[in-house]
Image (cartoon, rainbow, N blue to C red; front, side, top):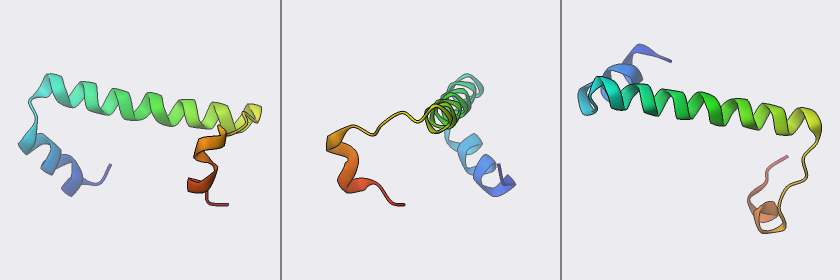
Amino acid sequence: MPDDIYEALQARYDEETMVIVITYAVLTLANNYFNNIVGTELDEYLIPYYKN
């Protein structure tokens, strides 16, 4: 994470909230990678938002 983004988050949130925000972001990223690897199909309502 770039320093400027981290510093902006750090100024806004306390340490506990920072851990929660970063953990959530990492778990979401891991979930997306997993779904791409196993070829999970996109829900129909999300298709208009999908970019190739």
